[in-house]
Length: 337
Image 1 (cartoon, one colour):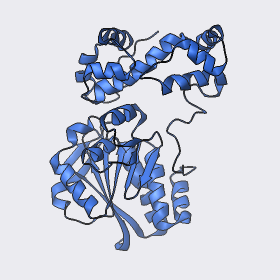
Image 2 (cartoon, helix red, strand yellow; image 1 turned 30 degrees about the horizontal axis):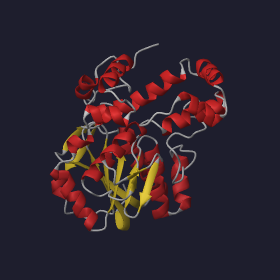
Image 3 (cartoon, one colour; image 1 turned 120 degrees about the vertical axis):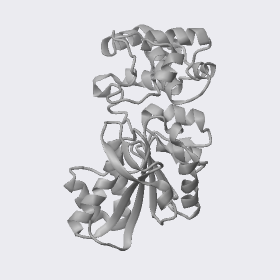
Image 4 (cartoon, helix red, strand yellow; image 1 turned 90 degrees about the vertical axis):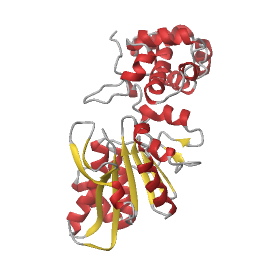
């Protein structure tokens, strides 16, 4: 790396066990490219963790880190927390205290993937917009009602930012590179790492044009699904959904059978259970609270439906679902047709 100067943007990347490697390296790699292309240390970065040493990512690769307490008094322009599985398990005083100290000093604090949960635990997202990976959005909203939860790729507020992770971290890194070095170098860095476009603030994680069924499904079917997703806690009767899109229940049934392969009732139940599974495995909410938040009036009915869908009771899934391991799929226990 070229020699640092007074204008070098200094970044600290704090990782937790089983962090997402793509998001973490994606954030800094555009800056590496910019330094290389311009022959100048526009940006510098280092990795740290609470314990220091090698920290294994969720894909099995490891990153060498410095002990956080040894650099907590150093000056950085940006501090980023990159986390993935069980972020609440890593929100220790050894991490929260220096984060609060840097925040008071005016440092820009950010989060990748589930790192937003750690910032929220530190009180650094109170009253602000924030995002996480779409799998964890419901959990963030249930646990922190003082946060305006967003489904965008990333959010930017004064001296705070959050990013859903994955390849979106490249866009986040390019945004800071553009702010620090200008459009020309940011565009050159994006081109160098074959990132064809820099997605702007406000870009959704799951654009409606491709989620959940893309252009192959009729507009009326996508409208029904959108209404279902807006009303998970208090499910709407199917006739009311049909009325909202101006089609008969028979027509809607045929559309679901043709394009989804299940009835509207079953599809509606399944997406509510998908939401429930995120709350079961990612929060400590009581099962009765989760059942209510997912539109089930009876906890017994909820448990029965949960087991039918995922092949495991919710209480068992809570303990097993919090154990990260390589190549874990989500939902883990989804049963085949």
